[in-house]
Amino acid sequence: MMEYEIFKGVVEEKFKEFLPEKYQDAQVEIRPVDKVNRTLDGLSIRVNEPGMNISPTIYVNHMYEDYVTTENLNATLERAAEGFMKAMEQKESINVNELTNAECAKDKIVFQLINTEQNKEMLANMPHREFKDLSVIYRMVVKIDGEGIASTPIHHGLAETLGFTEEQMFKLAAENTKRLLPPVIKSMNDVMRDIFMKDGMPPEIADMMLGEMPPEQQMYVISNNKGINGAVSMLYEDGLHDLAEKLGSDLYIMPSSIHEVIAVSTDMGNPNELAAMVAEINMDQVALDERLSNQVYHYDKDLRKVTLATDTPNKRLDGIVAEAPMVYEAGKTR
Image 1 (cartoon, rainbow, N blue to C red):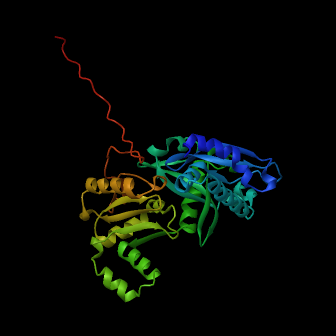
Image 2 (cartoon, helix red, strand yellow):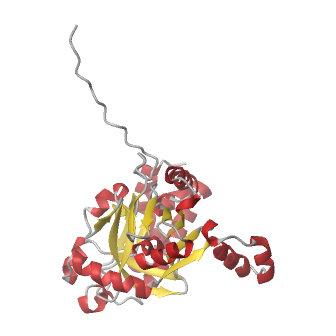
Image 3 (cartoon, rainbow, N blue to C red):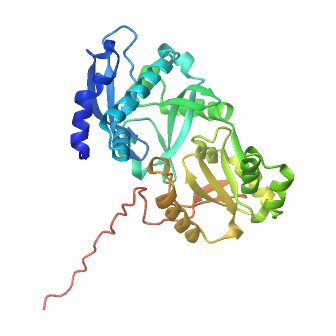
């Protein structure tokens, strides 16, 4: 089985062989692409034809995972080529001019929340603002349908093309995110009930299985109506305040993923213990590109303010913990 670097070279050399004839003179390039929480190797195919200046990116890392699983190079290349062609077909329905037109774009800019420490290199290339140990970045929605959300991150180049400052984008996204992707807060019991009923379980059976639990003893999932990049809904303080008033206490907010956070009454536990649980779940159960933070946040219902409740050393999300700086104490020479 090929090592990854050899595989990458083979992909760059052979990928066009699995594409239709019109792509045989295209330019193939593999370059690093900054994604949330990690950098991937992106394979792009550029065809010198009018209207073909934008090309979908295929990630070689994902292709290699498929190759390791199947041990079949040709099958991996065929699947990747099919995915590329499908993406090209979907691209035809996108009006590229709208992506660079400020008047069209102003109603499509939304928030996303990512980890600051883990994404320093990516953040250097895009407008953003910090929120505790996180950063708010901006995405432009291309399409929202029953299958999900198609969007593109806004880097400095696109922001300059649109003529928007970070402050302008923040104001636009504050309105657009709430309108296009409304915040949703549900108890964990309600979330489980929805899952059971979606699988065909009768409502009365679902209720019997879940039982009754006082509101102040439940966990609450905060996301948006699509469940995609929904952790940013914690920025909307009115929802947090309503929940805190309902529970009659402040809240601890645990970052489940970039898609959702979980809130509980501060009577439910110790923040450092909750943070230890979050970190363990992140490492064991959440994909790296979906991890948000290993910290826990505190919402004060009287001050109506979110602050960091913990300051654990594992600031990064990839398992690397920065070592504490060594301190040398000067002493007398004997």
